[in-house]
Length: 90
Image (cartoon, rainbow, N blue to C red; front, side):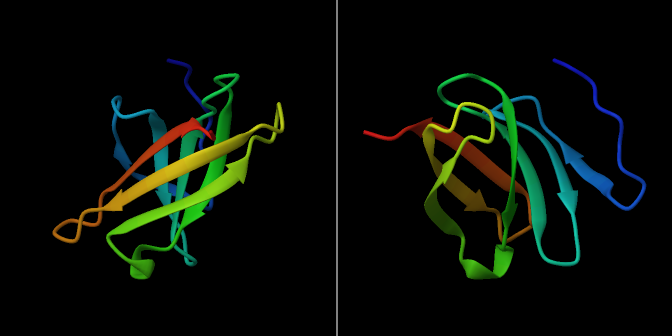
C-alpha cells in the first residue's frame, strides 16, 4: 500500500486496510474517502455525506480511466465510520 502526504487542512480520523478504501478525512462538508477504481485500481476521492443515510449508493466516474464505478457506502451510526466499495457498473 502506498503512503501519501497528508494535506495540512485535513486530519485523518480512521485508517482501514480492508474493504477497498484507503484513507478517510473528516471535512466541514462530510467525510472525504479515497477508494480504488474497480477498473484500473487507481485511487479516487469522493465526499460522503453521513447525514444522507446509513446506506448509500451512487455512480462516479474514475478520474484516471473515466470508467463508471458503482459506489456502495455504509455509514456506521454508532461511531461514524464509513465503509466504501467500488464495483464495475453492469
